[in-house]
Amino acid sequence: MRTARLTLGVVVLSLVVVGAAAGPASAQVDSSNGGEVCADAPTTGDSPVIVLPDGSYIHPDGSSNIESTLLPGTEGDLALCSGGDVEPTGAWSIGDVRGISVDETDEYSYRITVTDVTERATADFGPAVQNRDNVNDLRVNITPGRVAVTQIGGESYPVTINDTDRGRLLDANEEYESTLDEMETGARELNNTEGYDPNGSVSNGERLPRIDQTDTVNQSYDEIQSVLFSANTTDALDASENYRSDRLEGIENHLESAKQALTEQTRDAAVGVLGNFFAVLLVGAVLGGVGGRFATNRILSSVEAERRRSSAVDFRPKHLAGQVAIALVLVVGALALALTQDLLGPLGAAIEAVIPP
Image 1 (tube, rainbow, N blue to C red):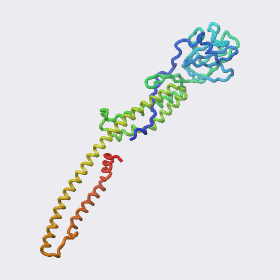
Image 2 (cartoon, rainbow, N blue to C red):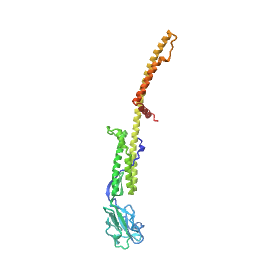
Image 3 (tube, rainbow, N blue to C red):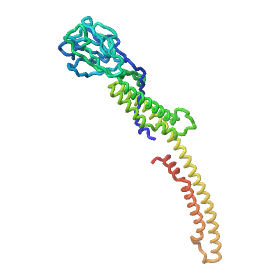
Image 4 (cartoon, rainbow, N blue to C red):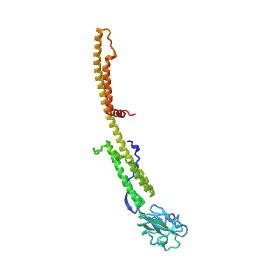
């Protein structure tokens, strides 16, 4: 088995927290960054602006179109921009907004959280801003789902994911992880160089199918990557790729060690087979040579005795015809035995193991 053919895709990803992702620890809006928060807000009228934990902003787009979608559990700060800067919360307030809860009031913003919804809804902030005139409308979609925290290689990464994709992710990861574990265990069992003592009743032939599950792993990995890509989680994607490389390297190391150990064992066994073969060949040659020489001497002595009695007698090849016939019969018998018992294949394999082509 060539380990280079294992094109695994490996990521351990499990949803350990489903609900709110880590929100801002303190207010993200104050008098020092008001210009930045309001930089892309409309220049006329007052504009509600949502500041998300990653430092991005959702502004009114000046039309009735809704360009942003939030998931339940998302936290942020709601500020009001006027004249290119933020207004203190003492000058305005926020009323009820569908799908939004107001958790805390800071000097320049209200801490908000997107609440659970059972179906797609629209949060309309403009009409909810109180004590102000000429307020631009800010509308966002809220879709059923969660902000989840995933763990990859021991590190946590927030992923915004809806309920459907969460199910896809959990199913794909369960199959992916269990299959990967089987492959790694099988590779480790083949690698006896680390002193691992697998169940002796399980043959290597039974372990190989557990290792050869590349297609299953790749399909699960592609599904996981598709969900992460859709969630636009660059850090999680990078982490999953690094983790995949680490797991792949570990499996390849086990298989490479097993391959080297198997090559050495095969070579040792082949040397033993060839040693026995040449030993038998040598014994046969010695016995055949000694026996043939003894029989030939007897024939020559008989011919020599007859020549003393008659000059017409001379040595001819026919005198050795019997010995040649016996030798041919023995050679043909040996070849027939090798062919009928399929001995040439193992012999060729032994030679190839000792002297690679």
